[in-house]
Image (tube, rainbow, N blue to C red; front, side):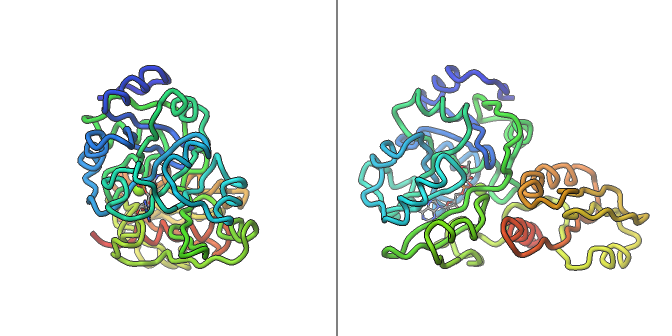
Length: 320
Ligand code: TXA
Ligand code: MG
């Protein structure tokens, strides 16, 4: 099994040899390799069992680095970059020829991000290439927010997991692209839509493209536990109407006391959506280990990060 370590030099050496390292970011752990090396990028796709039509994000540490890979940055993208980087924003921009086709799945655009994690930023500065890094989970599974999630997903194939502790935001980055100069949110994520709108004005949200591989990462069943999962408006009556099932329940802030609840996860007793988001995946990983019949979550308020949480829970309920 890959060691879990804080050794940046070791991680850097491994990456320079076209091998893979899992890296911490403030959103989720990434499965990283040299983004300019076809050999390394192929290893990422193979290990994740990810279809080649689903493009990857290039991670780097500065806007100057990003300019090596993109040909044009619309004004609104510059504003978003200034406001949110380093941070949980991914921009989809027109690419330069320096970006290999395997990264972009043959598209004319490339996804780029400057993550906000001190270890990974330090690592990136030791490299003269960007890191391609999808979330470090097998395709379709819940993203990892702790180093141990990564090692249990990938006992083989990884040389090292760079240990950055628990990811503080806990949900993937918000992806913003452009049609002409018009901004589009392609994936709800760790930055609330309201915060994007406060920065650049109106945006179109195209998040719900079921099973459309053209729409970024938005295959309908994604982020899913093995245990059958439900997302409901009235969690108490759902649980009461399944008396013979062993249930894991996820609530925003309310406590529920019913006999068939085996495990109750309250994501934020103090009603903070950011805290709830940061606990979501770790909770789903934990409940999925408990041999339950059902996981049920209550729908979160449709505002701020509540929308991103509902999006992930909704995808988790889709059948295989
Ligand atoms: O928070 C995150 O973004 C994490 C951390 C590790 O940075 N990464 C992540 O990567 O979530 P991944 O590969 O699991 O999701 C990246 C998404 C995919 O859904 C992909 O379809 C979309 O980005 N994407 C990548 N390049 C694109 C492009 N050129 N146009 C549209 N969507 C793109
Ligand atoms: Mg992913």
